[in-house]
Amino acid sequence: MRHWLLKSEPDVLGYADLVRVGREPWNGVRNYQARNFLRELRVGDLCLFHHSRARPTGVAGVARVVREAYPDDLQFDPASAYFDPTSPPDNPRWSMVDVAPVLALPAVVTLETLRTLPEWQDSPLIRKGNRLSVLPVTPEQFRAVLAVVGLSVDDLPPA
Image 1: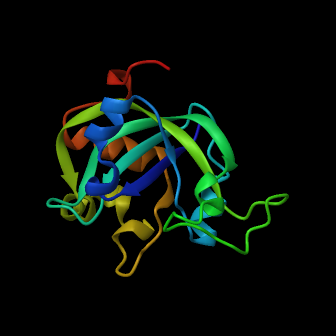
Image 2: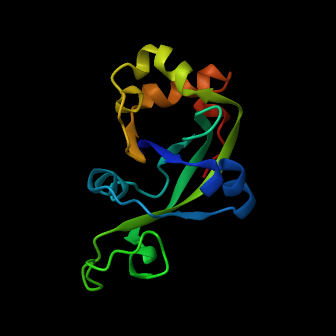
């Protein structure tokens, strides 16, 4: 199992929305590096669900991958902001995965807090200018986020 960080704007899809719907496609990724990371996600992988462009910005919960990469349907929808007229239907350029909620954190672990954690010092997330919506996270980084709010991986419900 690998660990990931998925960034979403709460007004588009917040962690509470994910809890409400129970399962959601992680679509609309239009950066090649993030897309390549997305294609590495496997069923059962755990993801830190990060609210970006929010107050506060930070990790709001934990999600689990429940379906591996498949073609992002938005790339073929002319009404979508994520439409890509150059993506061939027989070899789609963009992918999505499905995620489900695992656990809402009792408090958001803010980006400012992440910057203070030794485990996060080498993470691209805390570097200025990072725009990726999908990032790998080390097991140590994952555990450090949980520890900030008094949790451990043993507190996460099983798949």
